[in-house]
Image (tube, rainbow, N blue to C red):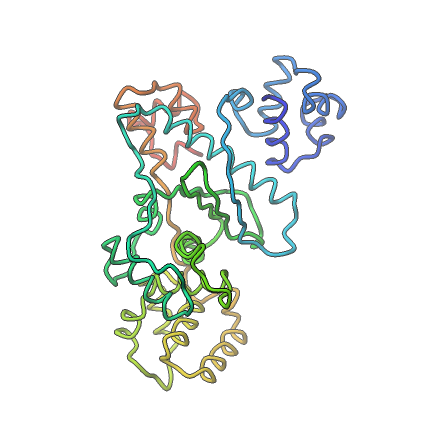
Length: 357
């Protein structure tokens, strides 16, 4: 247990054995022996390891081990393995704390609903037109209507999807990943991306859950999930209502306003107006060229769309504390705070933001 967790924490911190040895003040061979389970560190070195790796000492002895299956990354082909190791380590740590928290609830309490797909989904999807209909069906089943979804993370969490945000700096080489723990879908997003990019990643991964096993051989799953994401975040009827059925030109300001209303990037909206037949393919290509010339493909104008936050984990920690399922020490450990800081936060002695500084 200790050896495996040490190796994961080291990789998550992006450190080699030699680098960690230097931080702790031992030899690289000593770190190797720790990770191979041949020896155990002294109490003093255990504290140094925890400090160097940015974890609490309890991390090394946490008995629960989760199995994140079916992992699929949304990343660039040249994303280094070292970066993926860091992301995976962070994700596994958060997933373990999630699972431990849920296991602390009594069997009679279901703090998170099980994820299930609505009735009426087609057995086989053969066209993008069907994907448009499926996006509307999902919105209808979840009582979302056709209006903008203000808090997509809250929406997905309320339907039984575990959302994890990783702080690992990926330098635009990583958008997210998806997998399952037991039967619970898990979606991971990067905290370093603007809100519109996070939302598209979330909707894209929802597309995988909805369309998996349904696509005909002629449809590429990644393209299909991108189409679903756009249709789910910005439904065709809503887009037609805002822009009209057919346009000979569209002002950039219109795209900008729709972005901040629906939480979808201007580029994604430009893709949608083409998909919905509002503008011609040739006009769409001209707008793509305009975006490239103005540098909007990498940095869209104006302030970035605000990020969303996942608060469910922390809410469930406080719920478990309030119901007496756990005490303050376990609550602080799950959140990753010192007991004194947690006690102050619990008593509203400091703000939530200040408690993590």
